[in-house]
Image (cartoon, rainbow, N blue to C red; front, side, top):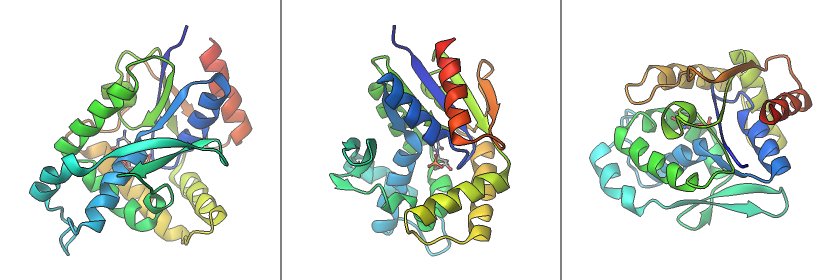
Length: 225
Ligand code: C5P
């Protein structure tokens, strides 16, 4: 019998790698909700919806939400879903430092969260889904059969993001990344609308000292229980 698996945690803690691998192994759909908040952010950057001081032109963004269409399509080479914004593959464009440094303020906006949460709930209407984010176990699927909350030290997480960007041949500076990870942790866990927190019934995993293979096995074991 298929279930819903909710994986939440801090920025760059490796949840998406775990979640993608598990989904592939057990034949479930994988949804990266961070990619959706990043896509709205990319749209806002491209349409000049940020003021020079970094604040968001909220009213304009709210009016344009109906023009923002986010979807996922399996990439045959990587075997993983790529993110599409209005039909364009933006999988790499949404991972830049520019997007990373603007996404958390976008994710504080209640109308953005409402629109994305509704889409996420539609995507997960049928069981057999692994979804990762910040509010999946608390807000999107409070009745998920399996909930995981992942943590790791900020330094370990920054190093992982650094390695990931380098592997993709993208620009990366370790201290900038560490600062960004810490800023997002703060904004994500202090915002008014669905702040990042562990659901009461989530199982916590601190993966600071685990290899990818060990995390994968740990998650698979939780699924089998
Ligand atoms: O997971 P990722 O680091 O790509 O997410 C980018 C940002 O999107 C987070 O820092 C957070 O501000 C926001 N986010 C969120 N709720 C989610 C997923 C992501 O607020 N479910």
